[in-house]
Image 1: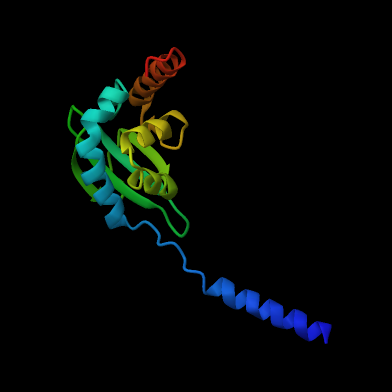
Image 2 (image 1 turned 90 degrees about the horizontal axis):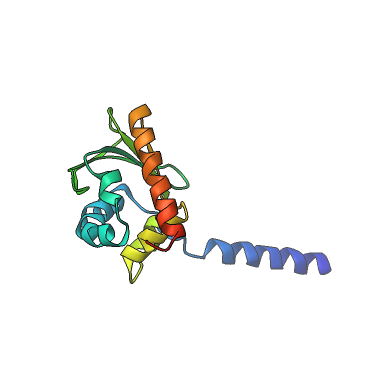
Length: 158
């Protein structure tokens, strides 16, 4: 009798778990929309909040990786000297100068935030959005900017 009750409870548990709706995963189209319609329009505000951001992201060919279960979203972005995305394509660019890595959860958090600029700033500060130069020259340049960011944050400048 106890065994039948336990089996019944287990079946009910499994059925209830399978009925829970699964959160929809970020699609490539949504990621492209995010960079074109959230990042670009907010760039002027980001530059005011995070000085030198256009120095890092301006004039680059960026290999964007959004990590997510079941397969990452990989995009290639070309930016003008001010850091605005002028070209965005599916897949890794052949000649990237900068690699930007984040997760699906971070993109969703910024997209759903009442203050996407502050959410982006926080994600950059705490490493939820990471970036690195590709190649020696770019790696050195990005490292210098990261050191400046570190000290600016330490002294409350940003």
